[in-house]
Length: 241
Image (cartoon, rainbow, N blue to C red; front, side, top):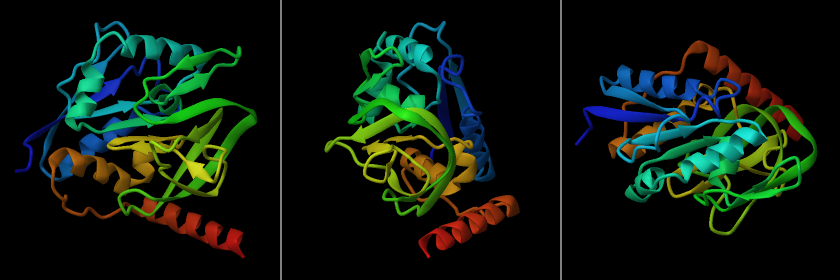
């Protein structure tokens, strides 16, 4: 049975909210509204006691080293997020959120920090920042090509307990094995900003279908997104020649 209300958790936007990643929650709410499904956004700030376990979908954005370390400490205060994941609630982690949700990450001072371990992914600083457009062919959910903007120093190895979100056809991505992002169960992580769900509505709908438990009515893409996708396809074809 279709849910009559979906609770979206925007987690720590005061710490992990760079590059407009909080826009992902607006995309989800609007796509639910277009389908006559009500939504409620629960904003979890670092001043809160802990993350609530009752939400249906959790979103964690990007941030710098200090913010990531603070976010991990906060997210360990209580079992709410882990209980939600164990219950099957999807989580979307972007950039720094990927590293926080991963196994470990190394900050600029050379210190390795344990992540939350929701995906098997270890991150270390690279030799230079990966900045620019990134395109990946998704290996998850049959959603095809994904596009976004990456701006990160980290290089992430995905372990055997998880899988990449996709294979890079343009840009850097994780920096290893042509991989981009990491997925374990319904925890989805990526380096793509944009916001990523505005640029990739099929990914947004995949997360929502996991929540509601059934396929959603297909919505038409706006003209701007169709034009962007056509341009990315032309670039991909030129690069393959």
